[in-house]
Image (cartoon, rainbow, N blue to C red; front, side, top):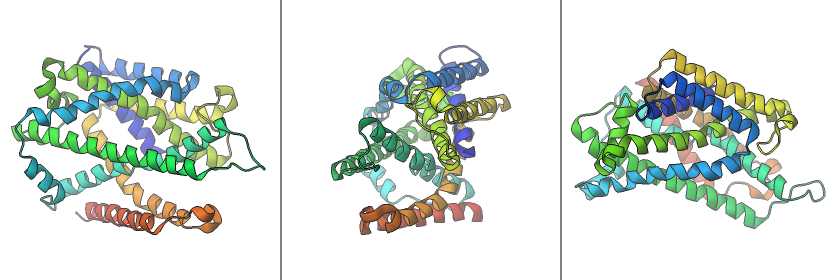
Length: 324
């Protein structure tokens, strides 16, 4: 919950900083405006309805696919260094490694994904013999949904890394500290509209992410304490659930009063996710292999191997960070 709240604050700060590049409005004012807007959305608008429209803003991220093709790149070298990276054992490199792995295995998605699937299920069917019946087809759909989403998100991440490498790093910018510097990566293809498109991408992803972050915190606390949950329920039927989301968003926006460096804060938040991922992965692997919980749907050998490798890699990266 702490990590999610900090991430909400950082997302709001980044959205405000990106918007400030286009509109000369004080960032604190923009942050308050975004926070107020998100609270209203959380209370009055079902997330699925909201996400249906906001997701189109994230198409701006596709620009990162096109920038490398507009420049002269040694693609063989790019693929070679991706497969066999040159590793320098320093604290900063270890921190970046954990920060890259952390959001890839985002802990909040463990709770959000499962809770949303259950919520969708309850909306679409009735109980049969007091149990929710999930078909094999639906399990395959969920698996496919998650698999495609993870593959696409990682490909997008790779192109963002590649784009910033050939535009910013190659010109001596080795440490991005402002939203303005980050937006410059889009200039080769967007020109003078780089800041506008960067703002749309950041705002779009931020508006989608904040309800997810706040919602996962609400699901965790509400389910642990036996409160009613549900993003599709009206406020009066799940007051405590929504109050947790509102408080998380409000506390997050207070971070903007601390005048933190938003880019560094994003990295530190990602590191926090990376550090808390191994114990969560361990617990989930244990549950996923427990027949009393999962019945016939326990993990397969392949899932256990992949999960075990993920656990070991995440743990090793975290230990390396603290050792260095």
